[in-house]
Amino acid sequence: MRLSTKGRYGTRAMLDLAIHYGEEPILLKNIAKRQEISERYLENIMTKLVSGGLARSARGQKGGFSLAKPPNEIRLSEVVQVLEGPIAPVECVDNPRLCNRSPDCVTIEIWGRLKKVMLDLLDSITLQDMVEMTRKKVSPLS
Image (cartoon, rainbow, N blue to C red; front, side, top):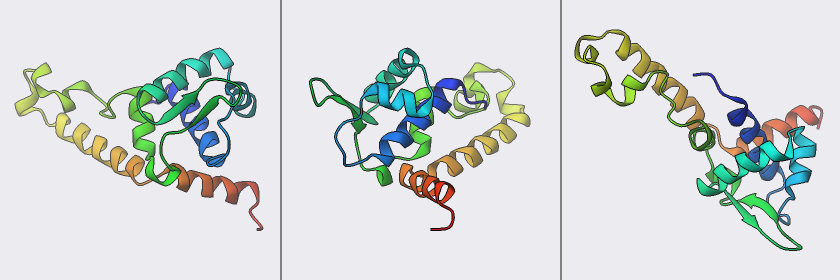
């Protein structure tokens, strides 16, 4: 599986929201500036994250975006799947009926194992883990 810019940028935006968790909603333009993402593109990404139940949007003077749940309750796998779709490296892993060779196919087993490894890794990382990783990178001596 290769992450698109949507997946990469969306992950960065969610990390930005996690770093600022508990504060007022964050303006889209501030996330875009900090993450060096086009506002227009980020708006589309945030729409998906809101509709996927991972982020909230608020209108008005104190409007902006925030996480829909605490950072320790949002797994990286959720973010990736909302933005990219299924984790499976090939469609037949999730839907063997797509290929008449599936019952006898050796490679489908390999792709299934690859999906499991990727999903297990992404499931093991929360946004809170990423916040802590960021803090270590930004101030490694503290």
